[in-house]
Image 1 (cartoon, rainbow, N blue to C red):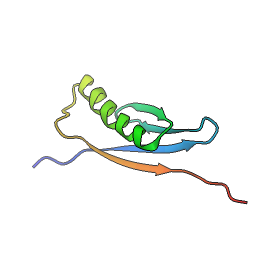
Image 2 (cartoon, helix red, strand yellow):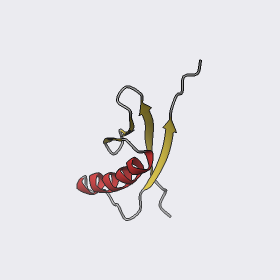
Image 3 (cartoon, one colour):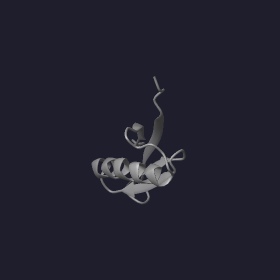
Length: 74
C-alpha cells in the first residue's frame, strides 16, 4: 500500500492588504483572496493544476490546511 502524501497549506490573514494568503512551498503555491472560502476553492484547483504540470499524480491529493488570523485586542 502506498503512503499518503500530504501537502501542508499555510493560510494567514494579511491585515495590511485585507486578504487571505495561502502558501505551500512543496507544490509550489502562493495565492491570495478576499474570502477565506473562495481562497480554499482556488487552492484546491490550483494545487491540482500545478502538480499535474509538474508531472505529479493528481488522482488523489491530500491538502492539510492550517490557518491563522491574529486579532489585536485593547
